[in-house]
Length: 307
Image (cartoon, rainbow, N blue to C red; front, side):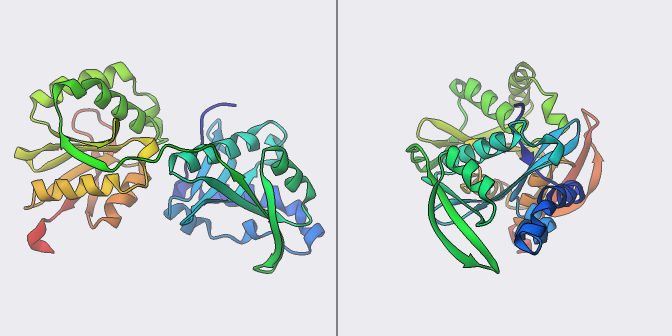
């Protein structure tokens, strides 16, 4: 079916709203009012990293809204452009949601649909979801469903330690996989061999690297250029995202460079930009990368004394 969906950005919001309207308008005569996905605040949901999009030739073809809950992942909405319906894209999006649920450590994934949308209920049943109840909620008659996932490996506690030469292959693989998972065009052009080959030179140029391990799994890494007061790289493995690994690595960077530092990130890596801004870094502007030329957002942290 193609690539997995990527996190949506604010640039996608208008297309998301249009697709949702196109996909759900047919139900208005059936239920007597717009279905709840047509009323959602997609700008807020995108800002919360809750919306994923599947694209076809650059156009949004599918939308997925995933809301983490304390004991389950809620598949809040899955919508496919009318011209792409019955092509398997909806099943692909639901399968991705199940993989994300397992990767984030949930034992089940849940959803709801309107009680009059019988074809949706039947589809979810064919995909292994079981009905758990019916109720009137937020002005709609809903069918609630759940799918229990295969037992997942419970992540071991995160341990952060300095890099050693034996970590080279694991570091290269994590760097490549995490960069590609950002879902931006620049990342899709990267090759594993290229990124693997950059590590020895970066170490020679002064990288101070720490790795975050979860048992035998590499969960993330941090690369600092201490003499330049620069946070050069911070990446988290896709399966360990949203577990606080990035936050812990950023806290380590603040401890190692307590007087402050700067960093660059790809300007269209909106998820990274939102993360840095949530963690109190100040955006200074956008400038070309000094070596590779692509647009980068520049952030600074003014140090512990400024707090």
